[in-house]
Image (cartoon, rainbow, N blue to C red):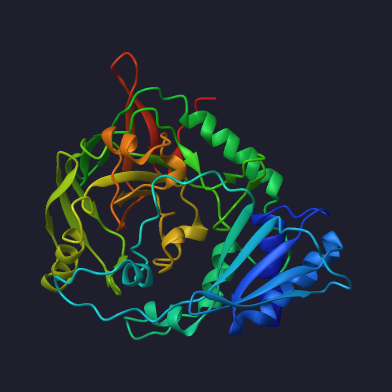
Length: 388
């Protein structure tokens, strides 16, 4: 187990953020993860020569802040924030209840504000192995090993051969160049069996963004550790058609294994699922006026490290399964407006709640209409089309 934490810390420091000698870390953590925070700080000092700030969190509030691995007062502001994310116990599901923002957060259904400034410094959220996480994956009676899930997904196989940060930046630029080839807004997602057939428009002035973020000073970092995914905001008035969701997703503390949705004028008009799951879907759709609007589409190239794990029960990693539709609200990074009211006038959905629907990569295709009115292939068989 100690070996896992050594590898995990190395991956965070070398892959999610390319730590340099000028960096100062601030690590926010609950008490139980302090040993891992200290390990990160110790490895960071080997690179930077600097100590780190350690902030102990209790009930989502800072309880204590100290400096560690420093022989002198640091007297510099942090350049990287790392949050070691544990799990709260999920609230009890109550049919047709209007949930608070706090409860939505505990269920991982709380959307971020659609307008946020560019970050001043880089930040990384690190999901930590925990009993609560394991319980959320154990509905079939088999307790999952969350350390094994992280190890398999990030390929922490002991040889420290994971992709360099520079390689990640190069691949990001290559993929976004291919995605930016498509100049139109109208798009079509469909499957060979006809179970999915959805037309919509991407939001005006929008473009594909990646999970490789930038600070105001143009420093790149990966806030959710894994960055090879691309998302784009959708005009919430535009979706028409139907989709089948063949992959499992979490909704109010329960795993939904299959469902289908009908969209009309951008919003879920009807759906099909088991009776028990229908209670949760209907409760989600009634949370606010925009909760059921299609807000964003995300695409990830298929790979064994993702498809071999049926469900992460960690929202940011569960969005990495082929084509994923997001209801409620898009990420702020993909919203091409600086004012909330302006964004909503241009069709950006702004719900307090969010839900991701994974369509997978098997026989799913994404096409976009080009300037001549013909359809360009964007994504098929789990691969982004190459136009370079």
